[in-house]
Length: 418
Image 1 (tube, rainbow, N blue to C red):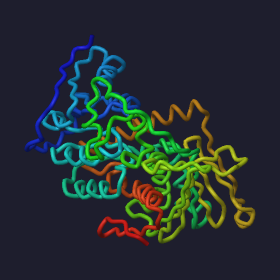
Image 2 (image 1 turned 180 degrees about the horizontal axis):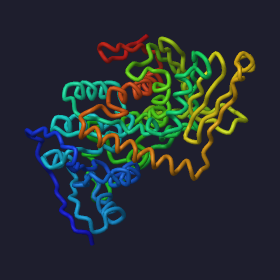
Image 3 (image 1 turned 30 degrees about the horizontal axis):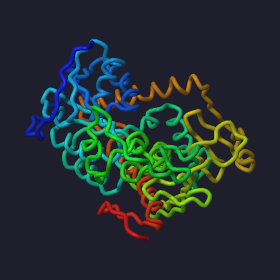
Image 4 (image 1 turned 180 degrees about the vertical axis):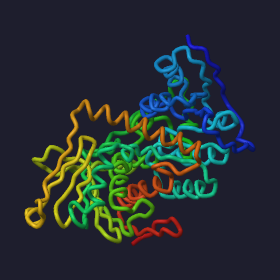
């Protein structure tokens, strides 16, 4: 049986000193949320030689118990069901916020108010309004905030971006992003209403709902929250943010967004849609100042070795990149114009390399976060970048939900009917 203290309840965070760590100081951190992403990020955080896991938190006691058993063994780590108890502690420097998207905003903002640095999972939130509130708090507090878009720290994505920066495929004027299915819990069909079920022992359902509408416990929502508008945005926001972050990196639009967004979406067949769920079939169009972009809930057929992810179409060829590597195809006309002739390129990863590189990118991304906590510099996916990588996904989610085109007002951080 692992030794730990289990604290319940708590008070709102009071005033905190904002200590800047020295180069040799250890960083004390806490996990808020113990779902699948925290289970994967656990190693990336705890591999840092200058880090110390001080506390864990989840609104479900069963997850706390399971985490102690599977991850912590006899390591003494305090546990809470109320995140505010973590924010009350002056000895904790940083928090990982890895919970359903709809609760990112209140917890990140409270953490900033408490003087903490924050690593928050992607996307930044499930609505534009909440994301804008997070950005305003970030700009006001000037803390270190890293969004969990770790592909940005993955070397072959950086290599592909450099090829575009260097003009290897010429001027890029169109990008098409294909997803490998709806993903992220998007509904492929309407689902029948289930009979009401009791809340599982140990789960604080009210706390899990947070600021979302108060509804009875529903295991579909608890387990598949990404597919419901009240809590997530389906594949549009879940996987979309990973790919659009790479588009923004490659196209030098890290701190801006699309001026125009439109979308079409449908449930397949003749079934009535559950309007609370994000549909599984959609196409979203974006207009940026210097290029157009489409995001699709499917991957067009191809004979190439990789299919999913963003494809950049340039005046001299095209490039596609995803977690399995990248491929470049140069047009014959461009190849003939150069001496020596421009060549097709490819860097493909085996399945084993893919898994290893993914874990490595998480370690690098967390290391960058830790280094910036000490230096007070901006990390690779600082929140200004993280917000704008999430923005087209949130605009797409809203355009799909409302069935109308949207324009983006960067000055007021607001979406309007186009």
